[in-house]
Length: 81
Length: 142
Image 1 (tube, rainbow over the protein chains, first blue to last red):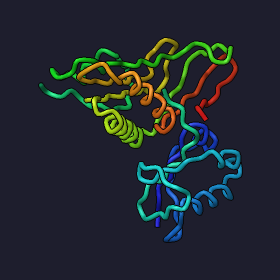
Image 2 (tube, chains in turn red, blue; image 1 turned 120 degrees about the vertical axis):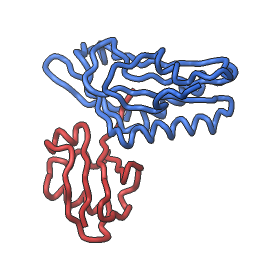
Image 3 (cartoon, chains in turn yellow, purple; image 1 turned 45 degrees about the vertical axis):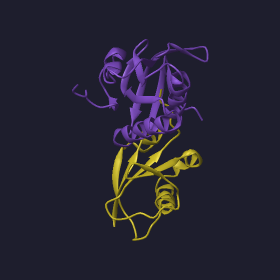
């Protein structure tokens, strides 16, 4: 299955990309996607503890299961206003 | 009266507080409060040159709408809420956010607007980068 991954702010700058598509095994969770990304991009490690996650525009936990066509966002600490 | 545009919006255009207040226009209201967030030229004693705001707009507009719903749930006297946040390059003194609330009477609007700005900083997927001479940093409330 394929998901779209979106990156923002410091994370987007670190990765040099705001969006990419990723193939995952069916039934993968947000945590498994994150684990895969950390293996590919160890530079992301300092950000992991403070990240929040959104699935199709709603906050979710790391245990949430992903489905084909989902949009997953990795959100560094927010601070608008 | 024709309802004007969106009540919850992420925009890359200049924001006018008057225009956001007008979005709440309704003959039944007796009080409107508007919080206007403005880019400050100094943080922690450092001179800021400008700010870069970034949002996840598809999610952020929903989050702002949720904050509006939370307010109307908590304070039954609040009639309408509008929140407009700007993104992109903002110079010192420019408006970054306008939160407008309307009620039949003035009671509770102050508490509600305080809640709105706190919640926005806490949950809206919006990020702020301070740019000063020789550096830049993403700032969060955390």
